[in-house]
Amino acid sequence: MEIMVVPIRVVGDIAICRDGGTLQVNYADYLKRGFLFTLPVVWARGESGRPEVSGYGFPKLERIVREKRRTKGKGGIYYLTSRVEVNVSVKTASKIVKQIEKLSKNNERNDLFAKLVKGFNKVIHSNAMHSTSA
Image 1 (cartoon, rainbow, N blue to C red):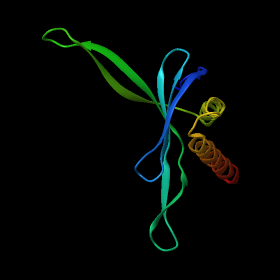
Image 2: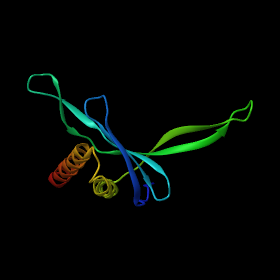
Image 3: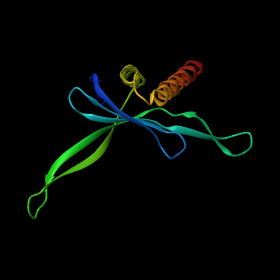
Image 4: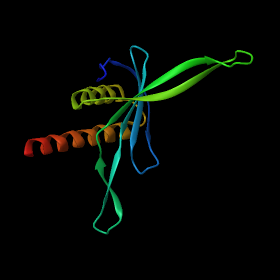
């Protein structure tokens, strides 16, 4: 089952992963649910025979689930955080990226947000080209 897109309330930070370029953005919607949107980097063997970044793969969406718990001893409170992968279609991912782009216009890391949007658009364009040529 695919998730219903609820308008994004706030876009958190954007990060480049240590794998060489995967981009991750966390955000929260108006239902106060947290999400992690990931655009994974894709590696290929370059002309030199060495691995090179060839672009990005299809995005992944995870819901951040935070559960309040109590310790057994004195009953202290702590939170257990986990991530649950959510099915995301091209249409839904496009809506999410458009909202992220709009809300990140004045962000100090706008260059990374622009890279996310550009990378996502290339993935979508590439997938559309492959599906029409099949």
